[in-house]
Length: 195
Image (tube, rainbow, N blue to C red):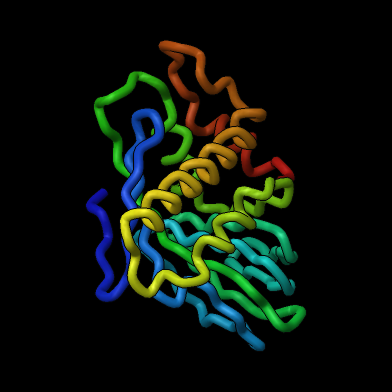
């Protein structure tokens, strides 16, 4: 998929294994909202939120999920959804991601990320480490990124994406060479998982 470009957004590009990530986030990356209500919509890219405080409800055609303070939410591309505030105020960071496959590695990271980011079901990760808090703290001022801040963000984004992969790995046979992935079985396993 072509990388997305939104005017006035910051961009971080990074690679993990055979996956290239293109991460976009607004200059007002940090958001404090009394009332976080977003009408129904979808994107051609993956939408991600780390909720530092407050509780919100994610509504899709299939389900309603409440996610709480300290959780990370991945909303796959093309999934129609809306977001409603449950407990005010909310503090969050939000960003958008596209991925593409590179030829630098023979591992299967791209397969796993592509399946997660295109699954048609949201993922709520509630067993996350301080990596996401570090990301929250590093993004307090992103109006103009200098080399040092961009480098720090790139490394922390890498840690965050690896953590997601590690949690997904527990449900799969990730990392076994020459493994042909059963896409339907993988999605079925993920759809029945509780993060």
